[in-house]
Image (cartoon, rainbow, N blue to C red; front, side):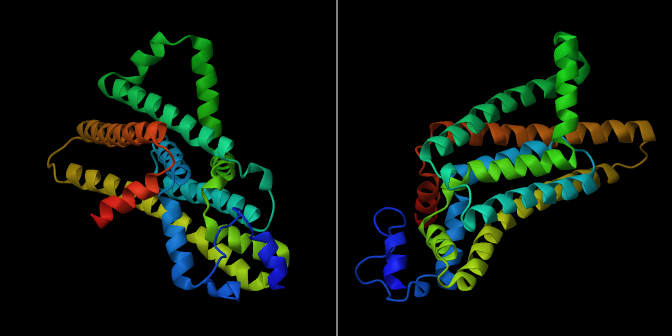
Length: 275
């Protein structure tokens, strides 16, 4: 058994088994090690790119219930993608070329979205639409409907998960090897599930923060007394515009970081924390 697992983990495939490591490889997969590995995974360019995708999609919705439901559907798609990879499928997507292309492309799109978001803040959608060819407006309208649908969120979440697969670290690859190798499979599988759940919890946190910020703005409107329905609606639109503008500027900044990063965002964050 140890020889079989050792063969799967030799070389640079995992790089976690070496001199001084436990004979029983499951000792490496302690609660602390798996938790730490999952948290570190969050600060990789691939997962940060997925967070930007989720934030972008959330800004397309204006109903709280839809934001929560669609957000959870997106997370479900991402979770399924990682789980499928964790049990041995889609190995061909574990390539640095695909991974780098993914987060660099998301970085570029984030920058463009941020610039577009700044323009929409200072002008109305009607004014912008007037400058765009009618055929393109119709295409964008259809694309928008697909993206904000349940299937749109599920598909984008799933594809985002697959394209960010290379972000996983040695601990996850070790668990995957145990699951696919058939040795101690049912010991390793719950750990794979737990590892993915750690990442998914960050996406849930993003959704909750978005809802929280929106509720703060609603309270600010409620504090304004003697407002007519029309004025209240105008204030709601104004504050919502500010929220979306702020998020898209954040997306732009993080997009710039993704575009110029050298795959060491996690090291950058840990250096900041330690200093």
